[in-house]
Image (cartoon, rainbow, N blue to C red; front, side, top):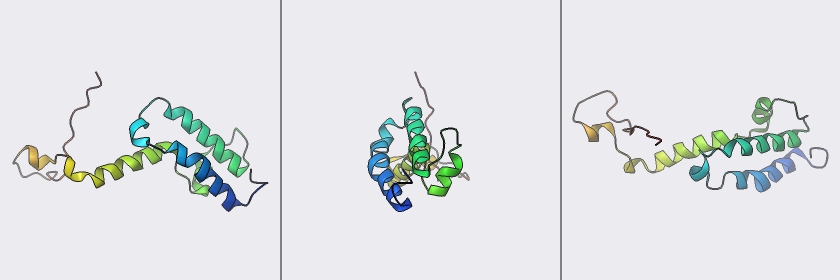
Amino acid sequence: MRELNTPEMCGFTYYSNYHSVATYGILLWGQSPGLQKILIRQKAAVRAICGASKRTRCTTLFRTEGILTVVAVFILACIKHIIVNKTRFNQNDMIHSYETRKKNDLALEPHRPS
């Protein structure tokens, strides 16, 4: 892909054709088992942009191209959602009246998967 286009065009192509589709609704499906398949395809797309072989590690490729992995995009989307909707979550000082160091932290409910 790099031979056919300039680096800027490769980036535009990646963001328009792949990144927008992969990150659509990521808050809803980001914890699904299918995320691993999407990450593998994202690595293949980044290798194609850089002209790297299939056995090349992608960590440095993501850094040099300035692209976040799908997992990092999911984490970033979760953090943005918490910051924007902070008033919807309980803080520790709403649960008890003790003056603690972490009274302004969000109160986490225990995770019960079943």
